[in-house]
Length: 114
Length: 111
Image 1 (spheres, one colour):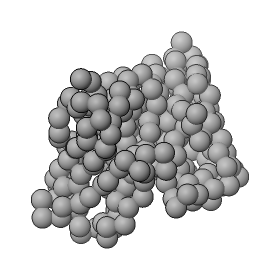
Image 2 (tube, chains in turn green, brown):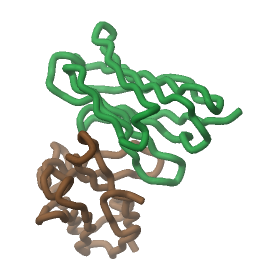
Image 3 (cartoon, rainbow over the protein chains, first blue to last red):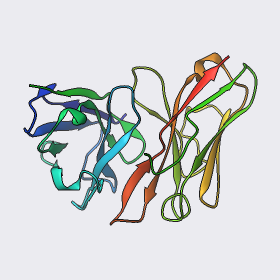
C-alpha cells in the first residue's frame, strides 16, 4: 500500500523559505508515470493546489504561487520536496503531499510567525 | 475566489438523495476529467470519484459522479449521518501552461 508522509518545520518566520519533504513508501517514485504534488489548506478554508512534478521532472505550478515555488524530486531517497520562498502569514496552512489525485499524506501544519 | 464554483452548503435527511454541483469552464471541466473529494473534520481529503464518474475501490456505490459540458455533479443516495463532511471538486485546467483548480467546497449537513 502506497504511503506518503510529510516532514519539515512546523514554524517558519516571515520572509523566510518554507521547506517540506514528502517521503514515499510502498512504491517507487520513479518507476511509474505519476504526478507528485503539493496542496495546502489554510485553517478553516478550502483546498489550494500548489504544484506538481512529473516522474520525468517536468513541473507545473499554481500561477499565483509560481514565482515563489520550487518542487523537486530525489529518486535516490524516494522523496520529493517543496520550497516556498518569502512566506507571509497568508501561507499558514496544512500542507499535503500527494500522488496524482489519489494518494495523500496526512498533512502537516506550517505556521508562519515571528 | 475559486475557479470552480460549488454551493457553499447542502443538506438532506437520512435516506435522501443529495446532489452537489461544480461549475467550471471550457479550459477545465469542459476538456478534462473531474475529481471529487470528501473531507471529514481533521482529516486529509479522500478521493471519492475520479475520471468524472469512476469510484476507487472501497467507495460505496451510493456515491456517483457525472459531467455535462462545463459542469459536473456529485450525487449521494441513501444519505447517512457519516456523510456529513466537506466535499470538493477538482480538475486540470489547460490555461496558463496547465494547473489544477479546485472548487471552494460544499459543507454537507445531514439533518
